[in-house]
Image (cartoon, rainbow, N blue to C red; front, top):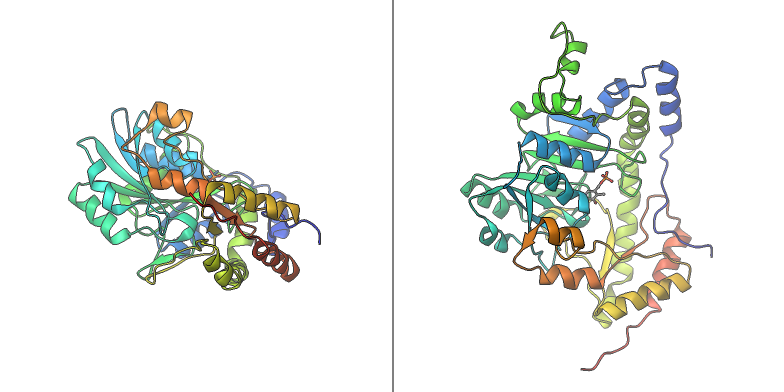
Length: 381
Ligand SMILES: *Cc1c(COP(=O)(O)O)cnc(C)c1O
């Protein structure tokens, strides 16, 4: 059995042809015809009316911070169990991330701890739907309303997921997507910003176009374009959008494959995990997830490391995930927290199994057989 990688980029079929078409057209700048088609598909998946493609999810988060006029002294509530970009985007504007701990079941922001972290300087709550399983959105939106805070969804894991029948990406005033090569739908590096507020969408277009109203100029709405406000360049080439369109059009195919792999893991590992005190993912009944990742929580940190080694010896590449941001050097410098003990515990015990749309039946079988041949040592204290 050859090695099973942690991830292998999946090609749905039309990507290369679309990329060739985009190059041949000569119109390889941003906001071309492929960008328009890809944006419309992202809007339909997130249930929003306005989507702007960006060069990454990181950039969509930076764009969000600019659009919300976040500045020095502002505080942003977010989990510590996330990628650095969630925090960096706001620190770049001079704001302070305030890390709130996660729930031990869904590994999402613990809504019961949010209100304690709200101060007169709090501006926003950034939620991350870990593994594409939604946060407790009803409670979080109620807290946001009570304190007049905006909600931003870092929806890098959640495209295609839902909460109470509503698509993820439709809850925040802004929601960011990632099309990095490790995500369900990818173009190497890419992202999008879904905008739930009409007043922000016009400004978003300006901020993303170096602070100019060039998009309006190209539509013939103004006769010259100029520097309107603070901005940057977050606009991907239409060549990348062509790649992305090939993936987005195959979304049902990609998702069908990923969900099948996810369910196979969850069924095949059920008895083994119960026997050894290993926790499988929790998906509450009122939400669906897009099979972004499959994780297990081992009973102890040494068992997790040993399990990763056990799989590696059998050619299976499994991986841990986020190292807590609050205890990282930059987290200590730029952010604050009242403590995140659950985050620390989870980060030490979590392992992700290989999961990608092109995984063969033999690869899947090999991962399962390799996993269930492991038994954590019983620790007596
Ligand atoms: C992948 C990821 C990002 C960053 O996405 P890029 O497109 O690589 O910038 C941000 N947040 C979360 C939660 C992610 O998983």
